[in-house]
Image (cartoon, rainbow, N blue to C red; front, side, top):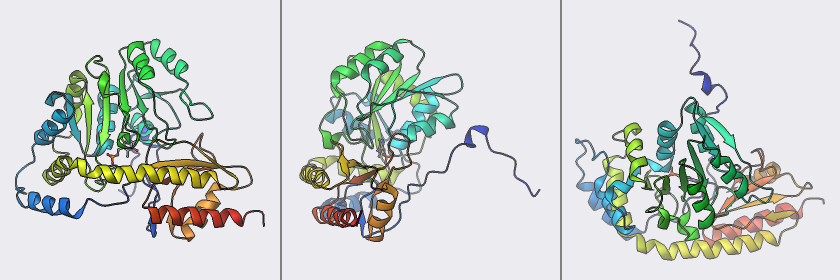
Length: 360
Ligand SMILES: *Cc1c(COP(=O)(O)O)cnc(C)c1O
């Protein structure tokens, strides 16, 4: 046969994920930690990997890791679920709580993976748009949930790419509005130091998503986890790939989690640098900068400057940031991840020079 029959119809409108992650001197486009795992911890990781039997299947639920994380959070093992990065768990949520005839409430602009997963699983997407300043229209979201037909919703705090966090009182109103599964995506909570962990005991419809990819420098290793409702996690266990969290990744994440206190000074530095980048961007012409509680900052140019053109010029200077200028609601916006002090300086200097040449 010379021809290939069409794939499932819901794929027709989907583009394969391509964040344009191309090599540059300064890689500040993917919200990674600019520093790799400290050398001493890497040595310990190497010793741990030596003990992993490669011929045996891994512990499917990664119980060693679950126990560590459960204990640190004052929860039971059944209130923790590990995944191959947070992304796998987001897909599992769509598989278990979405599907034909079911509805996902989205609050855009936010992480694009949520919509992708809903489309893949033929889940109807109900959007409640954020305001122009990217704050959530809390009244509209709660009112929509109160109708009682939404199967799951995901609220990102801090939101990616806009950087703002939710309040506990809003999350409580969400959880009380209906029996909808409410996922609070806290992928960046280590940089905001704000969590809704304290609501887990009271609400069976709450789960919290976390990851090792950002604060803990393990984007390349793929470990994420959920905290929360034992009832919801039980359903997710039915859809997950049994061996998605491989034995090597489990061993690495265990060592890193045991040493998590040693990451705190680095997190402090990123928070300090974030404030410097916000101030630096605020001092530039044509530029509106949005406040951020995460390890990235979103900024928007006025109509005199074309963000896609600036993105290209930054890349020509070997500084890679993320271009959101074609994303709905994020017109003319770029997002910069917080790097080391030197990387942030180079970004601010390059951007300053590019903007200086505008209108000349
Ligand atoms: C990075 C990120 C995740 C998870 O990333 P993984 O690397 O798959 O753990 C989840 N949600 C948001 C909003 C993110 O930015």
